Length: 424
Image 1 (cartoon, rainbow, N blue to C red):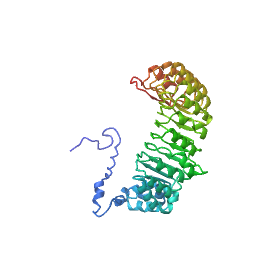
Image 2 (cartoon, rainbow, N blue to C red; image 1 turned 90 degrees about the vertical axis):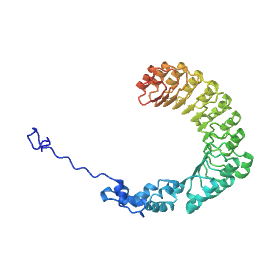
Image 3 (cartoon, rainbow, N blue to C red; image 1 turned 120 degrees about the vertical axis):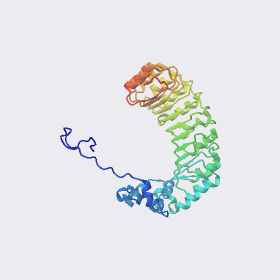
Image 4 (tube, one colour; image 1 turned 60 degrees about the vertical axis):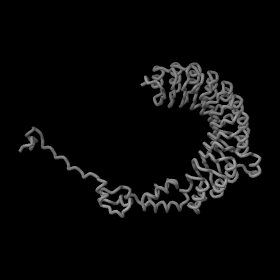
């Protein structure tokens, strides 16, 4: 019986059609599993099935796999060793080398983690340079064991620990002679040990610490900050976000001891214009500063800071309600190299924004969230003069579609954050 299809050339006025290729057999995991016996493990799945259907990772040589796995940290290698017997052998070979032991991410109580890591590292213990742990129990005995086992540490991060305090921090400061980076973010009970106690143990030596992050360390006081500055004359990066006990009395000593490049005193409500007068003495060394939500900072302090720290690249004054056009004009005229500026929830208006745009054409990031006095004219000036702008925040502002389109016209690569559903 005829099926109605063309059976030869000329019947439909065209050439004979080539029949479609036969379908390839579908890959089925069930078919592969059926070839395995119950005593075979997961590591044999890579070898089941015909050669054309085997996994491609078996085509890599041992040398190449060792090269790939060598980029992982020790904690990742421990998990990789459970994949198959072949990878377990690779991990055993890599663990005997010092390179994977440079960085350690640990979990659990610090004393237990330090003891286990020291036993596992063996002769490679001297290669450890970085130790990171999060939300662990830190005791004085644990800190002493850590510094006694890993004496060559240069980076130490003990974040989110509620048991970390000044007594546990003391051996870290005095015994780790190569330490350069300390991250204690989220340790609410930690404060810097007293200088009188540290002085007797450090004698003529000072630790070469360059980076300290004390974000959310609410127990840090002005006395602790002064002891920190005495201890670390090489300090370049200091972050005191939400250290609410820090005031002008502690901040004023920073220029006397350190040539900081980056400083954050965000949410430190005790920092006022007087503190900025003293911080301005950092001069051209300062490249990054954040005084966000320091409600007592006004045009006067920002004006002094902008005039003396003329090499600033980043300034965050978000939430400084007393900052207006005078301070913004001083920023524009004094810090022409500025790359990122946050003026959210300040009293800047059209006039200040226009002066800023003319004086800082190299701006890359600008945040104006909650600035109720700006409009389309100021935004058009920013778009016209700052054509390299890559990020703009105009959420909760009275900017209309005209200002939005001006930014899109002149700043081709700018990402605009807004809350107006009519912008498109």
